[in-house]
Length: 216
Image (cartoon, rainbow, N blue to C red):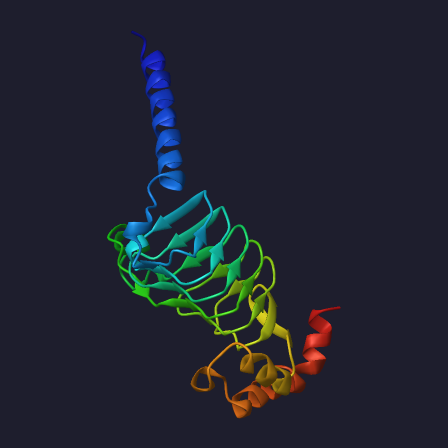
């Protein structure tokens, strides 16, 4: 048999295998029993590609819509209660180091990583196609705009957007947050007014001119 015919057949077989493997990974390989924690009221829509499912926890009444990619082979992804994440979420908990005198790919192939947990707190709303990078904590009640890439911690109840994501506002005023949390959390769980006021001043009031330019 001619070499080019053999090659074409081998490529076709590999493509078919790759297609079935991708189908398996995105629709059938993720089992609730394999998660670190998956509450019965939580929801994960398919397709979903998760590497390191044993490091993923999804708590009460939180939802992740389809086409998510969660890469957590060396650290944890924790989604706390009552949060919603739209389509296209990407979570990456690790990055590969590089050093003088060696090729980057050598450590990458060995899956050597600098890994940090990614945490999404309660009552968070994350828009479509958002990326959360290693070590990020999304504070309680925050809103993350579509297409944002988050590399720094996000303050509670802030509204962030962009690549890299920056605070462009707050969902409520500090005193409104206090009223809001009285209805939802026990006294020991509520955020302190002093912290809320400090965040509002540092991330919004002192940056108002910068924010006006961002949202023009």
